[in-house]
Amino acid sequence: MDRNFAHAATDIVIRNYTDSDWSSIWPIFHEVVAARDTYVYDPEWTSEQARNVWVEAPPGHTVVACEGSRLLGTAKMGPNRPGPASHIATASFMVASDARGRGVGRALGEYVLSWTREQGYAAMQFNAVVESNLAAVKLWQALGFQIIGTVPEAFEHARLGRVGLHIMYKRL
Image (tube, rainbow, N blue to C red):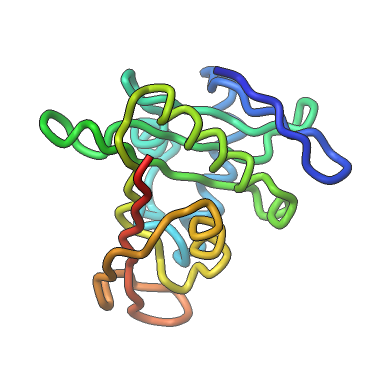
């Protein structure tokens, strides 16, 4: 399911991930994770380790957000857990630092919500939204997610020390 989203003066195209996209995703992934302020992934991972975690196998799905030939961000989505819990979806998002504030995250979020509905998921859960990541918390709340709990001091933030991880939920 490819979707076109228009935002402000630019067109953001969301399309399926292809193997040739990894060389553009890796710098974004590495920058986001190395900052140690939004993701629980290991900043020491190699490109191959990161790809093994980021690129989803079916029934999951990975997409990229592009403006022309430039990759601006990426998202992965699929079941939160297997088996009896597989009716609840989860997703993760990354946007290039120089593309933030332009609607890329919102476009990816809207795409993911549409995809999960089409796949028949009952709800979506984010397991670890860093509470100090105010832009993400605000976006997910604007898209209808609620904070249903916070694990105190569960994330070692590079500047703030230990901060909480929100669990966010939206019934579809």
